[in-house]
Amino acid sequence: MTWTQNYDPFGSPVLSTLVAALPVVLLLGLLATGRVSAHLAAVLGLLAAFLAAVLVFTPDQVETAGRVAWTQTVLAALLNGAAFGLFPIGWIVLAAIFLYSLTVETGQFEIVKHSVVNLSADRRIQALLIAFSFGAFIEGAAGFGTPVAISAALMMGAGFKPLQAAGLALIANTAPVAYGALGTPIVTLARVTLPPGMHLEAWEFQLSQMAGRQLPFFSLIVPVWLVWTMAGWRSALEIWPALLVCGGSFALVQFLISNLHGPWLVDVAGGVISMVALALFLRVWQPRTIWKFEDEPPAEEPRTYSTAEVASAWTPWALLTVFVFLWGIPQVKTLLGVPGKDERAAFAASSDTVLVKPTFIGVKVPGLHKEIARTYPVVPDKEIESATFEFGWLAGTGTGIFLAALVSAAWMRMTPGKVLWVFLDTCWRVRWPMFTIAVMLAIAFTTRFSGMDATLGLAFTQTGFFYPLCAALLGWLGVALTGSDTSSNALFGSLQTITARRLVSGGVLPLPEHQAMLLMAASNSSGGVMGKMIDAQSIVVAAVATGQHNQEGAILRYVFWHSLALALLMGLLVMAQAYWWTGMIPR
View (cartoon, rainbow, N blue to C red):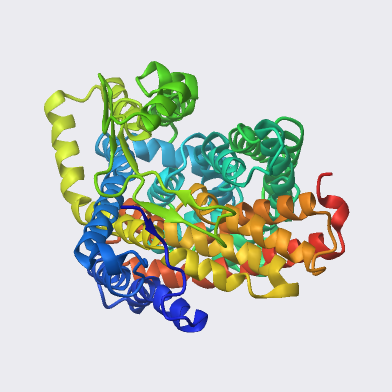
């Protein structure tokens, strides 16, 4: 049985959209109150999503096949999402916190903190270095919440308050997200939006160029926004040279690599050059006044560490960088046992339900794989959804981080018993956050496979002249729902290009069809970056990294309006490019 998604079960777009929005509104609303724990809010949101999928968003085939069969399909989607939440995402979070805990246990993190403070004791500069520049590099190498976990932990260890460390890490993890781990979001977007008759690599490159003509503006804005959020406008103006060097160097690299090379190394190169440029600049310039938190205790007499001690303390983080980067390279993944494109294609076309290799297991999810079809107007033609759970335990990014932690433990001369104790303690501390992440992803998969998220997306397509603004907001919504720019592009990319063609044929968009499709598709990815700071998965990761159990609501309230404001600004830029600044669109 193949179920065809039903995007308007009530025959009323308004009512159908309201019901489709209920799970995410309930989840975020409960989190925002601060009175409901994250795992309970997630469970209630999942219950709402499950009931809406089973009782409301039922395909027409339910009348003949029966509601029990449809319920089993929804359950399969729910369990598939929960499994994906645990691996790879939960495994990444657990491994990152394990590495951080090892450095704290050995006292090496104190040396790291002092080395950062020695570059500048100013908290504004520290936030730029850690949250923006270093976070961008980790986003480019790993993605999936890793930069938020690492940056937030580093900032808190350096002396930032937990809420500020979490909130600032989330705000900073925006401008790099559209290119993500080695360009994955753009590559995915290209595959789901490829125009007929165009070569995939050429379309991929044009999408990279278009996003690279939108995001550099925000690479300049986000560092300023970051400091303004923390210290106010006057304090931001006081360090405008540092803001220009930090954001400007990243924006320049982002533009050049995306437009001349492609999407793969944009964040990796941008993050490294931004860090180096700012560190070198601080050798010849320092703020006139050192800004610190109002209630921050007086600084202790700074201890002097030798160059060898500082290098040794930074070694775990250098190992993290190396392992994460290596584990992100497709050739390395293949070497570690992940099937190549040809083998994946052969498995997808075969009748086999399981693909087993020494370090990889792929499973076509029973009751879900090829059981659900998306249809017009979400996709041009009826499209059967695949559902494969992949457990590449050795090639997973979390495994790379875990191995970096083990090598770091050996470097820090920890005994095996001590390492095991720290790992078990870390597992215990993150047990509820791991559960919460699994439930969050169960919500995302339930809404996706039932068609509820597509119903929300279709609501944005009814805005006519203002659709370019809403195209960015649709990407924002997609990331807020799925927790991933890649997933948002897979979900809404095709819908963006369909709407673009419709608006061109109706005379609303004054662009050639190809350019309209390019602009709207890229805007889905660029607008989506602003939703990264409010997706439930990222908020839980930030809470775990900063030890703020049951404080997810406070973190959400800290970042929500920043997320919406930046998404609206991106939408205004897309409006300008669609109607007035059309020369920015590749031809």
